[in-house]
Amino acid sequence: MASFEFMSIIICILMYFALSPIYAMVDFNQYYNPLWGQNHITYLNQSTEVQLLLDQSGGAGFKSKTQYNSGLFTLRIKMSDKKTDGMITAFYLISDDQEARVNHDELDFEFIGTQGKLQTNIFANDMGGREQVFQLPFDPSEDFHTYQILYTPQRIVFFVDNIPIRTFENNTNRGINFPIKSLWSEASLWISDAVGWAGSVEWGYAPFIVSFQDFNISGCPAGSDCLPSTDFSPWTRHKLDTKNLNLMRNFRKKYMTYDYCRSEENKNRYPECA
Image: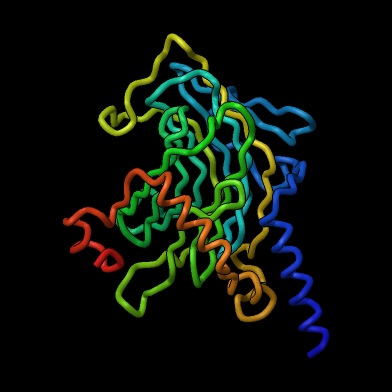
C-alpha cells in the first residue's frame, strides 16, 4: 500500500512539472515522424526544433510514432511573423478513422492565419462542430508559446501557456458524446479552401515558416499495460483546482469570441449546450 501511495505521489509530481513552465529540449525523433511534405520540414538544434514551411506548392506535417489512450500532449509553437489569413497551423489528436468524417474522434488546436486567432474543436464519434474561438492576448509570432491537450477518460482540457482555456467533461451518462478512441498526435501547416472561414493567403509574403519545440508526450500508449485504474490513476483523475478554474473563466470571458453553444440551433443539436 505504501509503495502504491509513493508511486502516486511521484506521478503527481511529474504531472506538476509537465504542466509547469519548464521547457524541455525534447528531440523531435523521440516521439514523432514526418507525415507529409518532407521537403518543407527543417530540423534545427539537434532536432529539438522543427520548422514547417508553407508556399504555393504546399505545406507539411508530422505525426506521433504511436497512438495513445490518454495523456498530456505538448508543443511550443512560434507563428510566422508574416501577417496573413488563409493558412492553418494545426496541433491535434486524431483517431485512425479520420477519413470517416461522421464517426471519428479528434481534438483540435487550429490557428486561423497568423494573427492570434485560435480555434478549438472536439469530434466525438461524429462530425465535430464544437468550435470555440479565441483571440490570443499576445502576438504568437514574437516568441514560442506552449499549447497542451490533456486527454483522459474523465475529461479533456486545452491549455495555453499553462492556463486552461477549455474543458470538456465525460458526461456520456447524460447522452453527451465523448472521445474514447486511441489517438495520434499530429501537427500540420496547410491552406484552407474555405475562404469564408479562414480568409485568403497573402502569397506575396510567402514562404511562411512556423517553428515547433518541446515535442513532449506523457501518456498511455495504445496496447500498453498502463490502465487508468492503476498506474495512471493520478493522471486520469487530474481535475482543475479553484485557482485554475478561475484562470479559465477569466481567460474565456476576455478572449473567447465564439462559442458553439451560444447558437440557438446548437442548443438543440448538442445536449451539453442545453
